[in-house]
Length: 471
Ligand SMILES: [Zn+2]
Image (cartoon, rainbow, N blue to C red; front, side, top):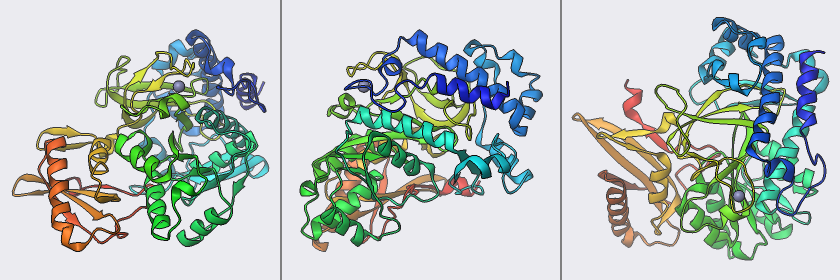
């Protein structure tokens, strides 16, 4: 049998409860509450089929395997996972540069895609040209099912109405999330490129109950609504979900969003190269004394945490960076992709009943954004937690690190909340300096900017390490 057909068959075989939920708590209870040995069997089957498919259809992956003298017949089960090299972003960047405009990594060719395709997604292009990924109709259906399962875990039910207040852009996340809401039966309000004012008008006239937004944008829009006399707590929204930035698992951010909206903030985790892989559940979202943990959809992903330097696996409960094998789509079936987000894993059973692995406290930031300041290491999410914990400043902030006179200097740029008179700005600066310096044990300077002038874009950059730019 053709390896593409075989891969699709294996993925389809394990799609339990493909169209209807199988329980009140879990959409696919057989998968989400499966014994861990069963999850491993499913991962094993999918991994073997994915490697054979990539060997036949992805020139890049075939080269990578050939370099380490591996053939598909060497990957007989998940026990052979560690033989496979870890894929890095540079593999895709180099392939893209050498073979424009598509690169030669995708197993989905132009002719396959133009006959059986769904959408083209690109990765963010902050440090290299955006890399394209062609997704098929099969991928759309798989993503709809995975997102429906995650939304079900968050408590989204038929009767809910969805809306996405952050612009979709070319990123995969909201496009797939929309399919997931439809899979449950929930309609979605199409906002297109509406500006903030129209988005607020839409919420007033056609109230949505489930809002997709980055946490930063949800805070911005909520403050604007309040300023216009439309209390977000009266807007009908009961669930918000964050993605693309770590907000939902940062306690101060979660508290801010939930207080402002009178709703529960949930979290999705994923990446273009691997797909929608982690989500919160009702039990985790109810935790107020600690950061939320995120479930991985383990029947569709193999999750590893490795040492950032040696790339060797670290044990359960130890800090390291994420490596994931996305086993849900034809467009991105890549084993062992280095995502580089810091986290820790646990396989203990969640109170919600799921047996799937959880990321303890979600993701703390990416390898590239990890800061070393005067010898101490700082996770970006730790900075966010402290900054957003200061009540008198808005949700938007930037951190700039520079080297002057051989010393690291940290500046936090932030804005006072609307309504704080200028006479109090000096006092606000003092508060931020005190809170950040004491919590992070780093001396900082604070620059206050007028409200609304610091970026709140989707995937907005918040940390500017100018020491790196100078090499
Ligand atoms: Zn749970």
